[in-house]
Image 1: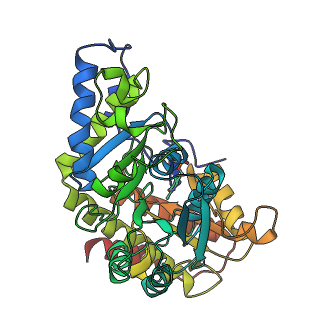
Image 2: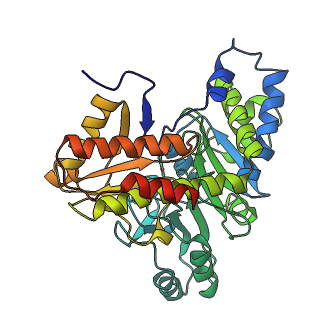
Length: 397
Ligand SMILES: *Cc1c(COP(=O)(O)O)cnc(C)c1O
């Protein structure tokens, strides 16, 4: 007998849960791609995406996942041999740096480990030492989806300014956009990358590069972008097909239209507040479980935790055992522990992640936490009591 027969819940950090309105928006015949509703819909996406990113800058849209957006961002701003500084707080910043290296950039990684944010003082010192201005760009994640560390973007910007350094500040918001508060222009971010399948609640397949005037100016000397990845025709299209460098992703466009409407109906401040509250409930449960046994939150300081996803450690192999139990017996799929230990290392089985990004509400989060509690009991894993009461209290505090 299994208790999973009901609506399954994919609680992994992307693809996230898609609203029924988003799913329904795609359930239609292929539209005319030369005129009419599709063309008007694409034009309407641009201001709504800018409003989510809180920028008056431009947005280039790609038929890609986040990795494609990473490449587009670099290809439109760098020349081969340019130096970039990666502030690593988990697997994803390192991955972006690997893309830069493969494109021909010289990559320097400042590694802050897997459970603490990038230190602005170290960044400032490094940039001060670069008196010749060799570093062209500073890359970091807002929320790293593997470690679930949240970086303090305004503090990092202040460090760049304090050093008087001209490097572009490029931020990966793929996990955090429309979950953790982010203010591209107010925070002085030159370029930001995002993707459709996390806080934007749309299937994987759209990548976005938002850029302000300084990044746009860098385009003139950049040399890595082929016609396909060049962001200029995509942001200044003379013909509709140029938005996507070919046939538009018709059904993704309708899906994203529905998702953006939902986000703006709720209101960005309310979206941020909901994610903050739900995250607090998750952390409260984890803190209660931590009182006995090995389970603990990966990031100890709540100020440095993302509101989109939470990484949890426990004794190996209990992370994998718990994930397996939840999927098999309860219909809840949790995220694997990513980048915390090498695959193949027994320690790899000592982590899991709970996603709480996008289309999630109180009953979904409490349901996920309740099934984790059931899994801990079923597997006989030691844990502190009172997690669900703590979570419920955190929701209404
Ligand atoms: C998901 C994610 C990526 C990679 O996106 P893909 O769509 O899987 O290519 C990159 N960075 C962050 C922070 C992410 O959360």
